[in-house]
Image (cartoon, rainbow, N blue to C red; front, side):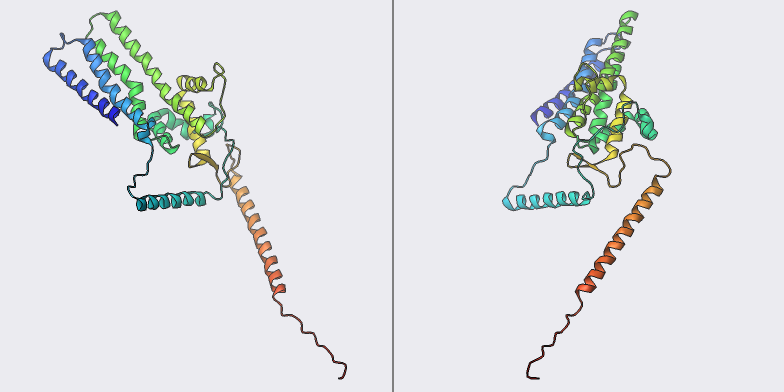
Length: 301
């Protein structure tokens, strides 16, 4: 907690310094390097604090019960919730070796997800991370936006006050170049998703799965995000595990006749259940018949 408080205080002091430069200097005399440093610190400090809150022990759930009764109560509540989750997914089976839903370029499997990943990348990314159990949706969305857009704005603002055309263009190009590296944030969480849910790695880049995941986000971020969302949709997510959805076919696409096939299979199952129940009723009626009384004839009669 102390680290988060220090980072937030650093953000405040950076904003105070920026206000001092704006008040104390006119625009032509304002030091561009000092302004760029204060803006960078003001943006980076809360972003680092947010990431630290997620990955540090602060982001974990703890039992805050002070006495034994509250601890027992919390344990019972957690146990009931766990049982409810397990019972709700009793028809599903845990997937021991899950796979990605299609390849990276198979965005035609669900074109709506592809469009959402293209036009609303940050929002879809944050929503998917929260669904997978990696933290708050808004924190991920804001951090992703900051890492991808902050370098451009910082270097552009620094270049405005520089009269040299060559240096101004160099600063603008540097800002755009650094914005691309903000996509590594998505690559980092793709690695965490692959490890937590035991998804198959790819050694296509340098023979290292982590490098491959980061490269996918650098060169094809929208396709990678769409694949991650499709994979999350294909399974039920319960307690950091993938579960097969009831009646989910292994094919990733289904034709118009799939509904009819499902109805036929369900009716077939119902007929089998009816036949089995009728046979059990007949057996039960046979077993419940009264016993036959046997008469013993005495020899004297």
